[in-house]
Image (cartoon, rainbow, N blue to C red):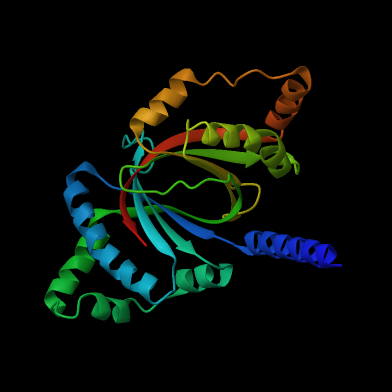
Length: 263
């Protein structure tokens, strides 16, 4: 009887832990910024100013965190040069923040001694220094098991995917994720995750998913890109991979470098 009770407790705790893990949700707002060369230094000043406000939002638990990433390639004809990422624990929080949040209140909390003239100058500099070219609302759909911790200097690859078949997410999770997990386990990359776009949506949307691989630095990314050949695969795995490729169109890849981080 004692053994049965112990076994029941183990099963209960396992189910409970798995349920808690599965219930954890992460929502992300990606904002892609176009910054002209002549406004580069101003843009950094602007994001430093706003990072103080985001620290206050984290303290008030309205967001989980905020990051600023530089993007490459970053030519003026190649899209955005920077990206900010705001993290939320629920879709409601993300949508509410996107509709409106009390900027004035957070500015007062973050910079209680800043004069109105200085604040207005910073608002003007914000409007002048960058253009928010695109906003994408995302939900984390899957990820590897890892203990990777981001820090300034972390490198991430962003693979923008367009779903062609409803089996795409299953293919990522069942065919490609185990390969990424193996790379993580072997120390060849830090982590991998699949993000599902909530908005924009529809047939005209540029992409439907973003897969993100993180590396501790440029050296680890370079080693991965130069030495990864996919490894040995049996015939069935090769066939599964080929079918998995058919479920999505790989639109493009960007490399991003973490420049600022608020948690």
